Image (tube, rainbow, N blue to C red; front, side, top):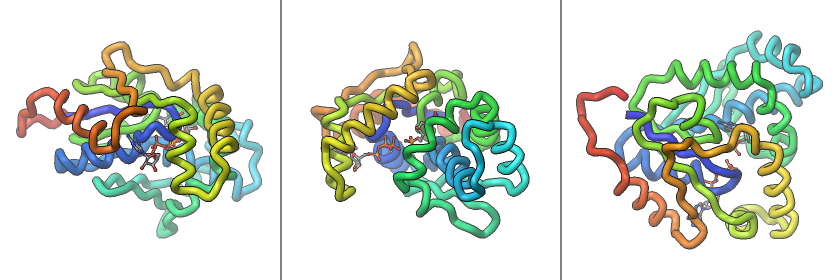
Amino acid sequence: MIVTIDGVAASGKSSVASGVARALGVPYVSSGLLYRAATLLGQEAGLDLTDAAELLLHLRSRPLRLEPLAGGNRVWQGDRDLTPDLHASGVDSGVSVVAAHPDVRAWVDGQLRALTAPFVAEGRDMGTNVFPEAPAKFYLTASPRVRAERRARERPEDVEAIEAALSRRDALDMAQSAPAPDAQIIDTGPLTLDGVIGVILAALPARDPSASK
Ligand SMILES: Nc1ncnc2c1ncn2[C@@H]1O[C@H](COP(=O)(O)OP(=O)(O)OP(=O)(O)O)[C@@H](O)[C@H]1O
Ligand SMILES: Nc1ccn([C@H]2C[C@H](O)[C@@H](COP(=O)(O)O)O2)c(=O)n1
């Protein structure tokens, strides 16, 4: 079975996906890391991130590998682990431009669709575009203030500045961030992390252990 968890920036997608995946004993797949890796490599090579053709040529010359694990995902380029660099604020500010290119999206989608189910996939368009056939879809929301307060607990930055950056990213990512019509929308604002995971686990269809999707 594939479970999709989409939502706005910092709504809890990766923490919730990891918790659900652990409970189900399957890996989770963080699609945003591939967009982040494309951005990091483009920036490191000094490329113009608005030039999708040049960026894709560069990405295809040394392929990336997403390693989906229940506890956390890693992205490799050869034997270099890119993961520790993928949440730098420079990547945060460039990634929406990269994620807006249709050809980059097709490059990411191809890698995701090549993965073997079962897994929990999180991102923006997992339920709408990449795995529309998934039998269980969820979409996480929370106000920009709630999300900024949560982020401020992990980064030594001002809540107002984080909130402004999140709202900017929400606007830039809006085109690919709509909930699937058959997704259950969960406002995580009033819920704990375990509470959100519990809502999702309770809503999952009964599992057939022999099914692969
Ligand atoms: N329901 C919740 N209650 C309290 N804290 C939460 C909840 N959900 C997530 N968090 C916390 O909010 C922060 C952001 O969560 P997380 O990184 O999982 O979000 P994300 O949607 O994957 O972010 P991004 O879009 O930047 O990849 C983390 O510190 C996480 O522990
Ligand atoms: N399926 C996806 C996943 C991510 N993105 C974009 C949106 C974000 O700006 C960026 C990083 O994602 P995050 O790590 O914050 O979840 O990648 C997307 O367009 N589609």
